[in-house]
Image 1 (cartoon, helix red, strand yellow):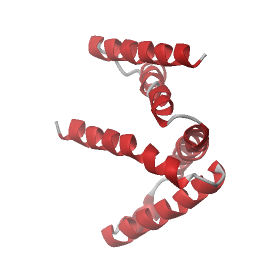
Image 2 (cartoon, one colour):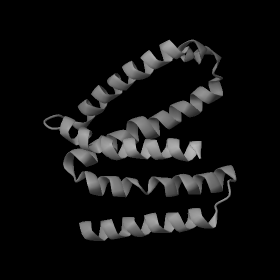
Image 3 (tube, one colour):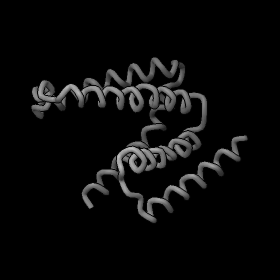
Length: 142
């Protein structure tokens, strides 16, 4: 239940964020906005890491973990967020968020195909509904 509540809180935050991002992007290029947001995030995470002691544990992270975290950072924080910022800058935040909701299907398939994770009937049903919603949004955009 705790994990579910954390994920739900994250979803609520991600649901609120595009409105502020769209307002913040008025009059600036998405890359400039991403750079500014990343610097703010660095300040927030750096402060948290400093006070929690995790900043001093970074040296103990194995190089293999750094490698995979760097790949994740590229896809999620750089390429994905830049595409997201461009989409909310020049498009509708509602449509953008709905299209981005397909990402759990990609994660589900990667977990199944590459990591051997099982997919339950309810996860398959949820993925079907997400995909159906994506098709509806896409057909409205064409």
